[in-house]
Image (cartoon, rainbow, N blue to C red; front, side, top):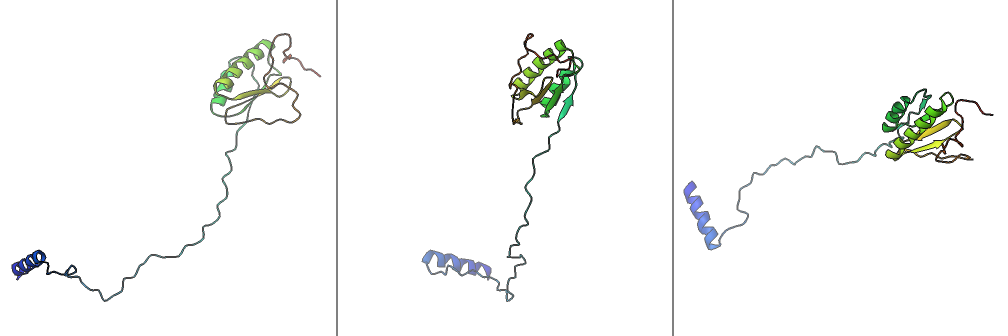
Length: 153
């Protein structure tokens, strides 16, 4: 009697004689069991990740062409120690001028560590010094510049 049930439902809904909950549902006699576990296990302590170790590059340039290698290291965010003890004076001045320009363009820093040794660092590093006696920007004018090719006591 499918059409008659449909007709009675329609008449009941129009006349207001209907139950809102007249729908048929299947009753399950079995209780619903949730397989999910409802307890939380304490999270294990994870160690703080250490910052990435830096690789320091030490360069002893002999020609001005070595300045390109120094620039590549700085672009790769590696600090460079430049040892000019065995470099001719003119080449050393030109090389430091070039590296100073590179560090400025990369927003890094160059510092004179000793008479013939410079430290160039990229912008992701800072250099802290104690008992600092050299200027942060090397003065490389011809009459004041250190003699890199000779040893000074």
